[in-house]
Length: 430
Image 1 (cartoon, one colour):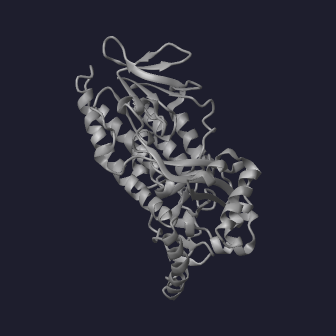
Image 2 (cartoon, helix red, strand yellow):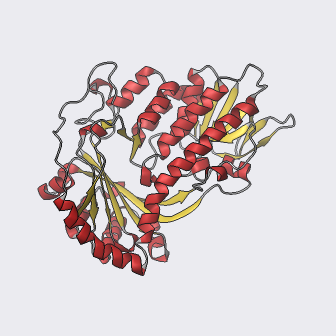
């Protein structure tokens, strides 16, 4: 079967690698000219996403990924803070977790290598349609169209393919604007290093201001102790932070700022909301060149609303269908699972493609269910943040935070022993 994949993000590359490995004829088109030129900073892959990857790529690629990933089970227990730096609660015990965090650039590079010569960069798709035989084809502004047995849109939130299928957009702004950056742990004061620890955390304050701080250490906390296989662009303990504010006329101008100007404006914004100075150190000491802005978009949380088209020889996956805010850390993993499910269904189609439509129908039913689940998880956090952006919500947040912090101090759970060693061996998994 000849398959054209539109979009070379995580989901598109995962599908391309799987199709190639399974013996299908595949070509992946992406507008980027460099796979390392990608937004975002780290991705969480749970056991389901890793299992899907094992069905898509060779074992050696999985080993390189684990050698480049930071194991969640090796970090401190996550914390929830308030805007004054008071502990509000503790996350789940991750000591038995199989999940890993990995740099987005690292993952995209590994997947691009697995796709190999079937990846065509610098090729922007302008549209999709069908030829006079009813077969799907991909259109380009500067090149002849390409025809295939199946076209898959993996082109993200603003998908050309999904918009064609749905006759309109498949998602809308979620009401939050986000900002992200990278800060070396060594650049923080000793006090703030101690407070943040080797964990990820989330802080929230009145008026919809929130700050996520993720901890990434793919060397000291490598999921697989095989440094010779590591491809990670992060070489030391690093905090990957994400700042969030309700989208409004007062925040729209921030999207036009860059570098030091954006970092300064973010700090001013948090200070206006009375955040404690030490809670902002991770932003103040970040590399200004790493700071970027992005809008949260989201599809419907109702599975029945996703992929609102009849199954056929054009379909889509990942954010093209179920655009998911990063607040649950599940979007990329869901796209990889979409790719594995689609490949599994295509492998059941006999030569000649007589049941392609049936296979796509089965895949889309699975994808709708998964999309609804990850969107529900992500939007619960978005709604919590937005709930503080009302007069009553702001007052309640300011009043309840010290009460919750006091209660948390009284029931602080015992700390677990530090796991200093990484897993080693050819069959090790996180």
